[in-house]
Structure formats: structure tokens, C-alpha cells
Image (cartoon, rainbow, N blue to C red; front, top):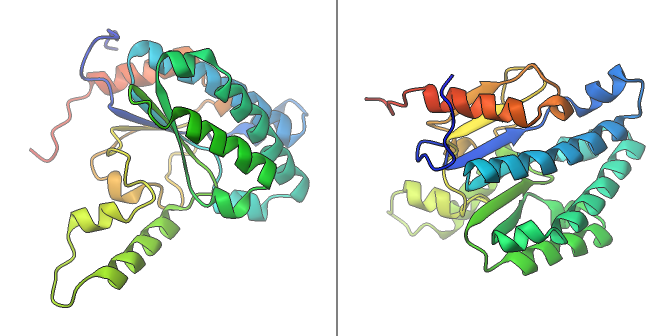
Length: 240
């Protein structure tokens, strides 16, 4: 393993974490599913602090897909939304967010899917951090990458002048993730090495992948450091 220097430039510019395993973590402990989500939210706070300490400037978390909200039991979905409201209120009041000038972004169909009380909290986070530009925290809520690509192509098709060619820049400009840089490293916890629902497919072309056997609440600061050390030790050739 390569030791991490918080000043080094070969850390990922954009780190994504897909936090899989909250429900299985709860089941193993004979807890309710939402207790696993609560443990996952607490772990997210720890990982954000550690990533910032190490020098990662942009980190994204996939909080929920559209399917998470529509196909899981109603009580679990309701509890998950309650956890979001508590967690993002806490994030908004966290002095480090403002001291470090961390911009918060929410990506997905949350405005269509979430209750008004939760949307109000999310809008407050957006408003309070809109001018910040030192660190970036992105949360994918009610998001589907397949849906994102379909909507982007629909928008390009509507606006494309006759005879003009579609460019990469046009596609990127019409994505929900248009303000996000390409993904350098994607970490998925939970022991299932796969991607889901076309997550950020446009910006995953050169992404390094790291799959952890740990269920998300157990993927602690040491596990994050190990994943980053693994990334730093890899040689990225970009097709060369």
C-alpha cells in the first residue's frame, strides 16, 4: 500500500461512494432496516470528515435511487426520508461545512418525490452553501442514471438545430450532473461488485473501481484510507 500524504496531487479529484449494505447490516444484528440507514448516515459524517482531512475536494454519495423509494416497504421509505431530514439539518448546522466552504448539491428527482418538510431542509442547504467553492458534497437522491441519460438526450433533441451534430459538450450540458467533474474513483461497499442503474454513466469512462466486502456502516475511516491508498498506488494510463 502507498501511504497517503494529504498534500499529494494524485488523490482522486472526484470520489464517489455507493453505500450498499445498510439493510443487511441491520438484519445481521436483528434490527429494523431503518436502523441500518441511521448507522449509515452516521458513518457518512465520519467519511466526509476523513476525506476532507486527507484532501479529497469532491465527494459524492448515492443516497437513494428512484426504485429505492417506490419498491421498498412504505414504512422503510418513510423512515429513510425522516433520516434524511435529520441528517441534512445536522449537516446544515455543522460549523465545518461553513468553515471549509463546502458547497452542497442534491442530484435527482427529490423535488418531485420528497415531502415538503424535507425539501425545505434541502433548499436551505443549497441556499446556505451556494457561494462556497473549496469543497463539494454531492448527494444523489431519487436518482437514476438511465433516466438522467434519457432526459439529457430528449433535451438535446428538442434544442438541436437542423443539420447540426450532437457534441459531447451538448450532452454534458444537459445532464443533471453537468456541474460535476468526471469520477476518478468509485467505491462500492457491501460485497457485491457491480454498478447500478447507469450511475453517472457519462462521467464513468475512466473511473477506477474499488469494491469492499464491508457493509456500509462498517466501512470506516481506515477502510476509506485503504481504498485511497490502493487508488494512489495504481498507474492510470487513460488508454496510453
